[in-house]
Image (cartoon, rainbow, N blue to C red; front, side):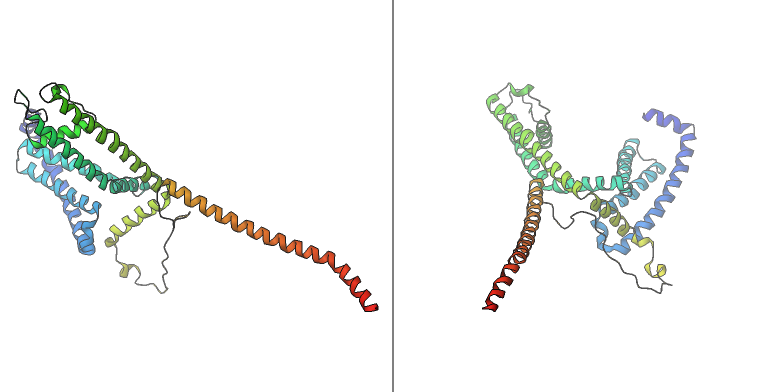
Length: 318
């Protein structure tokens, strides 16, 4: 690949097109850098709190670095490393524009919420991976051939433990010294990481999916309002409402359907729904009971009134 690069560069065609497209990319990057600078001045410290803002900043930095490295004749392999990161970041930016459409905005919100709900799970998974990686690395030093089955260093041992937790079982070297202990570690690792923790993350994702799906319209509106807030610096309120002679009233828009109930899991949500429905039915039955009692009382009074009139008439004659 590097030979092809050098060959195309020698005929001058690649060199010319590279400089031309590089100049265009630099112009775009200067414009986007100016936009990001305005956004930093407008949002101040809130700028760094947004993942999308940091992604925009990384896009400008990495793409500019690729063009500069190409202009300065940096090493082919070094430029490819930065180019790979720049391309990956650009693809991630597509998720930003998916927030515009109502059919995909809530999906982006769902991914974000799943990642948020995974933070404590990731901590537990890291502890389990480090624990088993450390154990395998120490026990692997007893190998008779001198080669550690977990890897040459602690980082390799962590990778070995992580791959084993995902089902990549490298047990060929277990038939050596301390084989019984290795198999015990293997069984405990698969039980805790592969069976318990990975099924736990499926349950966490399922609960998050239900929560976001329950409030799909709210999630879509939240993504749209976040985009409006992030790009609020592009227009001036004073200029937009300069000639306005009326009062503007802003009211929060709420999605339809029970947005005042916080999500507490599928079973709790079902329990709350049944409880609210039962209270409504009980109140309705009590109202019907009162109406029936009133009707019965009125009917009884109507039937008893003639008898009372006759009795009163007889008493008056006496």
